Amino acid sequence: MKLKRRSFLKLVGATGAGLALSQMGFDVRPIEAASNECRIHSAREYTSVCNFCSCGCGMICHVKDGKLINLEGDPDHVVSEGTLCSKGASTSMIPNSDQRVKTPLYRAPGSDRWEEISWETAIEKVAKKIKQTRDDHWITDETIGGETYTVNRTDAIGFLGGAQINNEECYLMTKMARLLGVSFLEHQARV
Ligand code: SF4
Image 1 (spheres, rainbow, N blue to C red):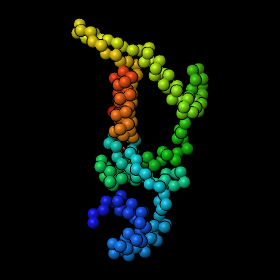
Image 2 (image 1 turned 180 degrees about the horizontal axis):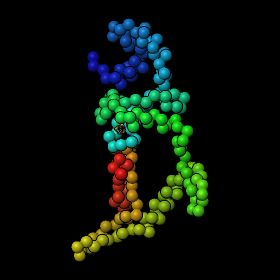
Image 3 (image 1 turned 45 degrees about the vertical axis):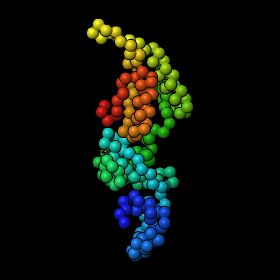
Image 4 (image 1 turned 135 degrees about the vertical axis):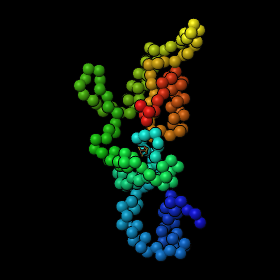
């Protein structure tokens, strides 16, 4: 039977190490003892994607009591096959950092300080700004080489994607940008 690492771990997790491995003919006692001491024992496992560059390397993250306690390359990931560069490997420092910003910050015009605001307030503010900017800078037509074309776009807004955005999210973001008449679409990794 050919088992990938992830499938193997799932099998072990689902059926119990003793049952799964003993059924394969292994002596499981040393593994059971090591498993109980393992720091990711009973942690929840998630997959993620590195947010630093456009390679999109895959990660496995282990979370316990709301804290990331382990991060490693995902051997089953089609792009990176378990590898992470030094930058990707250092991602583990971000989620638990006390400098991490977890709520939107707003600095009012003329103010010298940032204040925390709710996500609802932030989204409303951004939506109003987008609408205002779009209305103020709408271009209906453009003349090129003596010919006038209908363009219906705004050049005053740009959309910047990030490396953690997956295909489906990219599709939705691109669709929204096009619906708004935005033609400047870029990705964080190329800037
Ligand atoms: S691990 Fe390194 S190469 Fe892979 S996506 Fe992150 S920064 Fe890029």
